[in-house]
Length: 370
Ligand code: IPM
Ligand code: MN
Image (cartoon, rainbow, N blue to C red; front, side, top):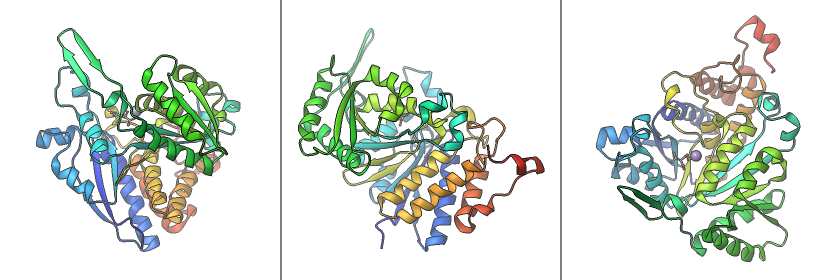
């Protein structure tokens, strides 16, 4: 029996609740198809948790997560806090706190290109050929978590890393590279930052155990350019919390939309799955958000629990939708399928196959492959 039985569901803010609803439809279909019986329990996090309890991460939520095998998270953030630098309680504190509480030190963000989206992406198609990489982003250290000071005319954020913190994520990144194309790129700023020089030393040392993996290094400024100029060079990227945050949003441009990028976080004794995108408050409640990032994060969850068939089934349903033009308008202005429709149709595809996709109109039947 799989170890995946209890799932904590934290919908969060903005489009978080809507995209998570679509993941729950997919989980329901997988339950039916493969005879699983998952126990789901919801918890509050983010701005909604502040509104209801005063805390962005109530203890009750931590308790639900700790007793679950995996956590599914939507998104966090609300403009009423973004524009108020003096707010002392912020939704994002909930996200950082759950990452810390669950020890989620390794955040894995795969960058996958879908063939029939290549022409829609802002980059020239030839730059996207052969692009397939995965970012290993450190998630519980660095400048996000170092000591902060704030005075009336001065503020600081400390960037700290220890050998231990770097070694544990770099080990996972080397292992991943070994199962892929055997190339690992460390992204840092070792020409300036002491903490980056620590990353280099630890990673170079660890590389001795992985002679079959090609290791190279890029400074973050150069890497930001290389991601656009020659993204096919990457296989596995390993980097710190802040650089990983930036390089992953940038990488989403290659895929066509931030709405496609899933992530999974591995912790000391927990796992959490969340889309790379944020709460996108402008779209909240309009049923226009792209649920694919959340749905693919759910697929990553099944894979981490060795439920590969289930994971493949979800990924194939996503591919079926994209290849038949069933997508939200962030990907294609003429293909404005609703967020909830994507969840419904993937539910049907998982149970009945890709024929569940029917053209909406006469015209679409000729034009549904974009
Ligand atoms: C992400 C997000 C978060 C981060 C924010 C919402 C705190 O941008 O998961 O990438 O910076 O880690
Ligand atoms: Mn981010």
